[in-house]
Amino acid sequence: MLKVALTGGIATGKSYCLARFAGLGVPVIDADRLAREAVEPGTPAMDAIRARFGPDVFVPSGALDRQRLGAIVFHDGRARRDLEAIVHPEVYRRIKAWSLEVEAGSGHPLAMADIPLLFETGHEHEFDRVVVVACAPARQIERLRTRNAMSEEEAQRRLDAQWPIARKVDRANYVIATDATFEDTNRQVDLTYRALTRDAWGGAS
Image (cartoon, rainbow, N blue to C red; front, side):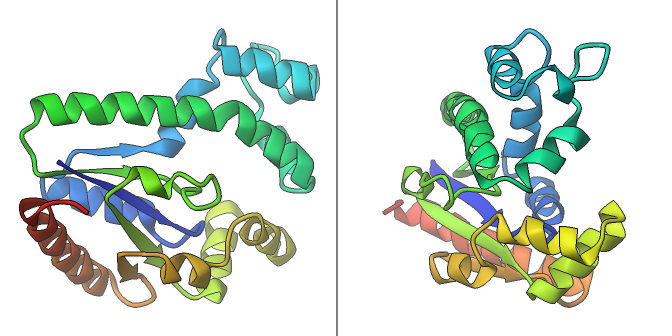
């Protein structure tokens, strides 16, 4: 089974592309969803976050106040790295377990994990192929401001917390550009799916 990582920058359209791959029958998993599950009340990661960031990043019910925590980590590089050191190991553990289950049971020639910070966390070597979803940085900022009602400064700060998209493109096996129409993105996803399927049958490198 070919293990594929889907990555890119924030607001480049990764979730849309992942859904398209899923619609083509590819087993998929979303690291963002795993990260949310990893910090549910009662988990070791939640306890570690409380120890590092204190009670102010929690709502009265005991759940994580993601907005307040996000405001901290996107303004403080050290805080962001501390949070990532708590959450990322658990996310990759879950991805590995899922991959083994898929390989044992699905019979599909490939499986795909959407991992936004794949390169930043240094885990690209764990996958046979990397697909980068990309668009112009100005388009990322436009989408972020529309989607999250944030200032241009805040949107830029979130982009700056990740590798530049051009750097990710340089390290990709396949690139899907999402600057144009949905139809154009769909066409690229379909072409990439066919290429990955050929890679899988030809043997992963």
